[in-house]
Length: 174
Image 1 (cartoon, helix red, strand yellow):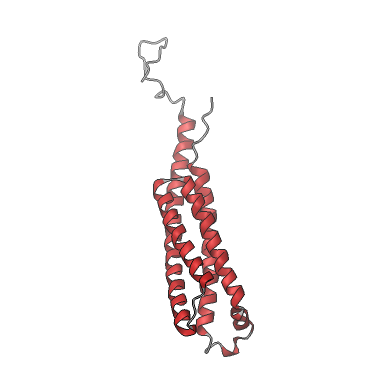
Image 2: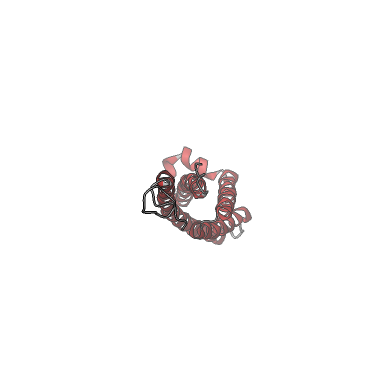
């Protein structure tokens, strides 16, 4: 460290005189926000992984019942699993590019899931007519999973965006 010349006989290294206190407080609060955002994102990624596993089981069950594979549902699940890998890597390594990729790909996967539900149109019939819910438990379960997945997606997007914003270095006041 450089020694500061002052009028008195004692000299202190630059930066230890308290002149950068406000900058250090900004950096400290950013570290705290990033740590909280990373832990929240970790929980959201875990919740998305569980929901995607449930969706994969649903796809397997539907394929065994119908005999045909729903390609849109499979591509949605694959996209979401890939995005979860990139999201976890971006979270652990604090890489904004990976986190942005995670947001985009997981959103596309969620849109594919919604398109699947809209294409089947059975979910809306189940919601409108709850009289025969005992026979359509699978569709109610799938629709509920889609709604929960949508809410988790919104929370993960907002958490990731705030995390990316806090990861950028603060501007130092001159």
